[in-house]
Length: 279
Ligand SMILES: CC/C=C\C/C=C\CCCC/C=C/C(=O)SCCNC(=O)CCNC(=O)[C@H](O)C(C)(C)COP(=O)(O)OP(=O)(O)OC[C@H]1O[C@@H](n2cnc3c(N)ncnc32)[C@H](O)[C@@H]1OP(=O)(O)O
Image (tube, rainbow, N blue to C red; front, side, top):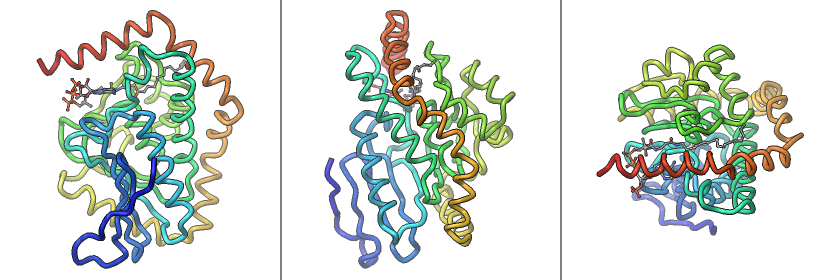
């Protein structure tokens, strides 16, 4: 993927020179040190290998540019934040592909979860499974108050299982008992329920998600970076190290699990159901 610069937005000067890749738009505002990263992989921002790769490249570019201290993650696709992992990457492929794909999923989580940036999820659409995981890696989550925008780790509804580091991220957010129930039942929460259980930090009208994210960002960026970053690291490093210590085993575990005939059948059936739903 190549990072492309696009023309500055009208009347904004250099600080809003947009850049990004085909599937990840980056709208940086150097003056405030905040960049907005938008997933743009229509129709539902499914986390394909390409999107994961481009996301990692764009995130790394922002982390290496000391101008930026905070990033807001949001969607350029209407009604959907992200539909989660791209199911077509996990069925009908070969073990080598599954391994490559899972390594990219791990990489995205590792980079987001321990990022030195302030990360705020401006959730402007449905946020199941892998989409929910991305929002959980952020420091703060704002969800649009729309009953269609469900959020949760619903993997069991597909007949698959969220791996331990998905589980750990949820437990770190909503606690063990709430996570135990949510993961086993594959719960997708309505905005009010997500707020109540602590899965999101704020629920606001749809047209206020981004402005709310910007004002929350200002509050987080008022904290001296070094102190905040060390504190974030203290809170999250044990969780991250659990995966780092067994990344290859986790990949092998994924490949053997996803390659099972029964799992392949569940995923195919689930994809078919998604397509019938439209018919
Ligand atoms: C012990 C454990 C060991 C190892 C680990 C084991 C397994 C690893 C996996 C565990 C982690 C998995 C995480 C995941 O993210 S799995 C993906 C789960 N995602 C979902 O369940 C969401 C499915 N999608 C939806 O519910 C809806 O699409 C959504 C997001 C609400 C939007 O609805 P709508 O706007 O009506 O759009 P459509 O449903 O019509 O979809 C449009 C189009 O997109 C296709 N599509 C939707 N979601 C996905 C997806 N996740 N991947 C690929 N494609 C998707 C859909 O089929 C439609 O396609 P079409 O061709 O008909 O246009």
